[in-house]
Image (cartoon, rainbow, N blue to C red; front, side, top):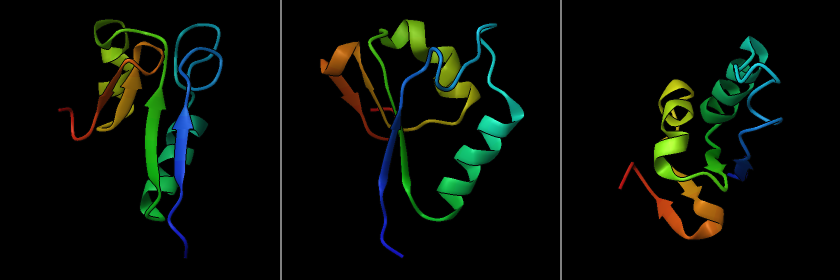
Amino acid sequence: MERKLFAFDIDGTLLNSEKKALDSTREALAKLREQGHLVTLATGRSRYMAQEVIWDLDFTNYVLCNGAAAFVDHE
């Protein structure tokens, strides 16, 4: 299978209107990772503002501040 990159925004995409991730969202992210795809977060938020989502949904790679900062394995 061809490995693909999936990038997700936070508000209205990964989180619902109550700022919570649904179980179905968690399951979908886990399935993509299990299939070997690269799953990343892409948001306009700062690292501080995105940190809870990063840890809660197990992101190790993310693009923050509208592309001004990128992290691979949290570095």
